[in-house]
Image (cartoon, rainbow, N blue to C red; front, side, top):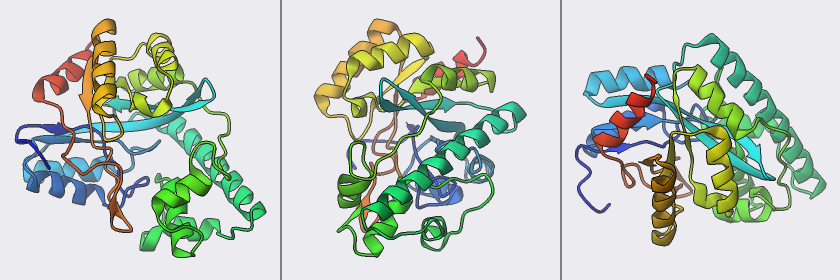
Length: 286
């Protein structure tokens, strides 16, 4: 891990509340051990891990940003919207997220059916078992959990192979049911007291669509530093953020270690400074 991360914030990571391998408490401890000043926990379509992470952060003296990553659909692509400083006790927000997890469950069923049609026999119970960590209320399962089962049962060599063959957008078993739009997700985040930021724009392969999302969703920021952005992409999105006067965020998108491989980046490898967090915080009072 290069560079001095002391005093920095990793603003994108996932716990066992969604598709990460570490509990919220474990993520906080790792961040503290690595000298970070703070983190944001941004699980997919759930805030179930935020309380545990916040309590542990208070114990170890780590600053904590309550976050989320909401799955949306625009331009025939899955677009992810990060939300920072959301209120995890907001009842309307919780109801809306429960609906999103219902859509995620529908997608999971459709993917498993498509896999069965391809002669790949894995069950929802195997997916929900999550390597010995059964699903808890408010948590969600996703494609990485399916990939684990595919590897374990010999249908794929490793996580990347499982996604390339079956689970990635355009692969044999990929399915995406109707979802909310990025603008709706941004509205939900703001209604819950939070600040919306476009996640990893380089993954969408369509900068025109990214610009459209920025405009329609009226986001506050763009995730510029991310493991899946090369140097040219990072500079491109930094310039786009300057053009639209947006906050530039950074995060590892850490999901933990699967089959010996870190997915996406190592916790603390992609970080933002205190000024970024303060800028996001100021947006909550507007």
